[in-house]
Length: 322
Image 1 (cartoon, one colour):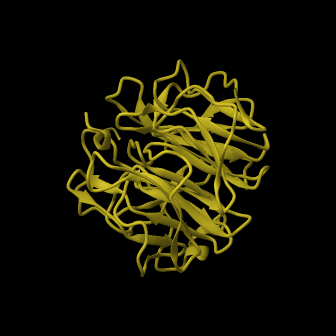
Image 2 (tube, helix red, strand yellow):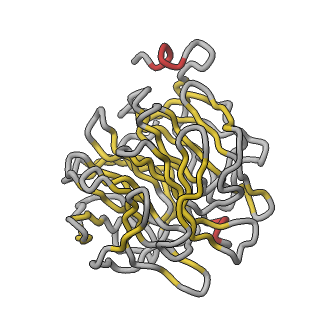
């Protein structure tokens, strides 16, 4: 299988043109994205249904799903063409979801930037261009969305550049720092007030185990690496006051949770939690004070999952599928 193939008040808030819809849960997914959207008070999911052997047609529109804590609801079903492995983050300053790039298959890659708040809009102007397997994080201290790395139209070429988006304009902020890579994970650390990047992989270089910190001017590398890992996801768990990493490859015996203590990563016990998986996504629900996980690719490398879990910092709970 190729890398890409593996790969309430809500209605009032959204407006009458985009009412919340109670419906079946999101389809099994890997390479999707979760963020906490404060303007709707929910963890939201975009680009569900991708990453497996079967997927929606290329003409399908991406839906925005919202997690209430009891069920998933479709908040918007009229997004841009569905895609996988895009860079997605949430701008907490402007209260909008920002998405750049992504791909549908080897011959269909996207290079535009979209935003979602109470509907989708495409951002004009140039930027990083077509790329997938990339990551974005929002620097809350500086009010910038940060994008690093990813792959382009040539599957043998990966990027090692850093871009920033201020809500109007993309700027190429650095070309030095972490080695070029795909399938890394990245998030804003509210303790250090830095965007943190961990792991990933690159053709000919294998899987990385390094951790880097972006201060808006340059990247600095931590001295305490973890075991090599790619295809993982990261979030800041406010209850733990720490970044956590979940899932990834090589496959772990379980979800493989890591917690960042200072500059070091330590194993975080997660009894009775989700099994091993890659390209799941996680987001911390600020309103309900739990970490939410959805889907991912199964440890067998073939199955794609559609389960929803919550983690309070000590215990996992599998949520009813509805």
